[in-house]
Length: 150
Image 1 (tube, rainbow, N blue to C red):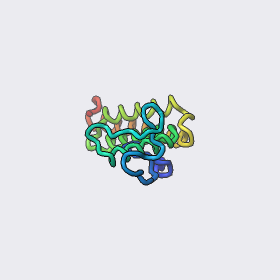
Image 2 (image 1 turned 90 degrees about the vertical axis):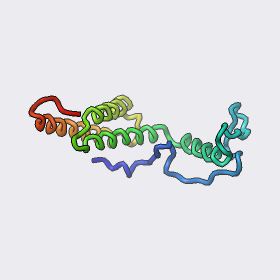
Image 3 (image 1 turned 90 degrees about the horizontal axis):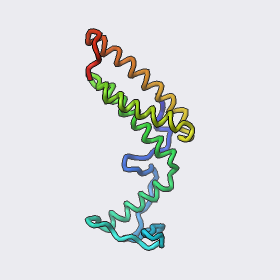
Image 4 (image 1 turned 135 degrees about the vertical axis):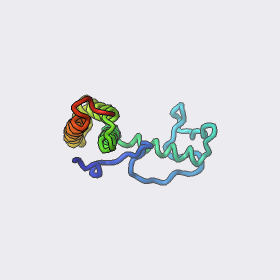
């Protein structure tokens, strides 16, 4: 099994594992207005200035993270999703199949564009596909040879 912990991480909110201080009230360094002028953006309706500053900080962090790292982390998430569905009792095979297929689509289509994570992602894909085949076969046998239950 691959060790996703050795990869740079990006959380579900799209933020990297890096920390940084949110700047001031409303105007954060490096924040550009819609016209690219560098003028601070006003907070969207319903969002206070502190929250808007935090959102802008998180956007800058994501923008500073290579896309290959963000996409690879989302791919690892699909691997985890497939594993979760396969570990349910009974296994949720159709949900697992969708996650495995989505994971495979990313890994096989993007290949080396996924950067340093590409070899680990290919290994993880092979592992989760093998697990799917083994578990679906076991489930089919337990159902008397009929189609696997989902």
